Length: 261
Ligand code: CAA
Image 1: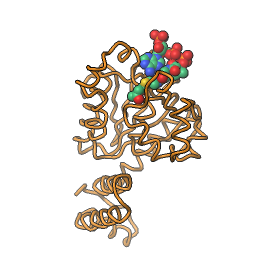
Image 2 (image 1 turned 120 degrees about the horizontal axis):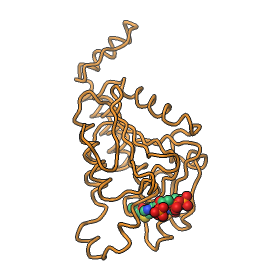
Image 3 (image 1 turned 180 degrees about the vertical axis):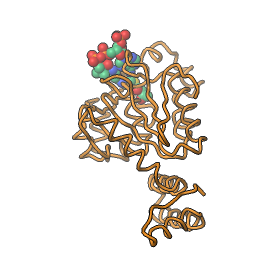
Image 4 (image 1 turned 60 degrees about the vertical axis):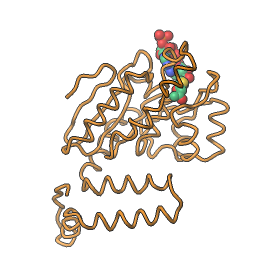
């Protein structure tokens, strides 16, 4: 496994655990973190033995407190534009894997941290987690998709509230507003996230990818197109050996033996 400067990775069975490892900067996301995450997630995606990933932040305080303000403070506007700054998070990181992954949010998920958590297929949060898009307090706005993903996740009212006031939302509010799939006691976070990932890893791998693709399509298409896309995916997946095995195993009252084909 590659050595990274700003993250650590560990393969546990069929689950890859990736940890952003800049606790002294509350895991702020600089360009090295982006490059490391892209490589780690590509490695995960290309490894047939790996079926699901979990992303978390090192230390007890933060998942990630945002894009690295110290990296951006003196950067000329022309450089942001010339480099298409932040584009890599959408163009490369979110596309680095077709396989499912979970964000295990252990503390602050602010600005870019909230945005990266929302790039996950779903979020499991510690009861100490705090979410927000406080960029307005820095005289800017979200830059890694926050205004768009937050509005889709929690609706216009709360997205506007969070973006315009810059306030933080606690884990209970994040769960009740639909941003977070589960909230668990802080000390149980990693057990819960790893066991959710292990449960996904036990599913037929192509079906896992297809389920993810189908749900994602709900945010990109009309209802009619999305339903047609889902039906076509279902029909394609019906051609897999794992579909035959899954249904046969159910009828024979035994566990399925997936081949990933
Ligand atoms: N970038 C760089 N460094 C950061 C950081 C960030 N986003 N967030 C925290 N840090 C650093 C602090 O500068 C501090 O470093 P030093 O010890 O060297 O001073 C260290 O992490 C610890 O932080 P604090 O002392 O501030 O910790 P705290 O417990 O008092 O406060 C906090 C915690 C409320 C999360 C506070 O750190 C904070 O408000 N952080 C910034 C949050 C923010 O504005 N995020 C948005 C960034 S912009 C963005 O993300 C753009 C985008 O959309 C992509």
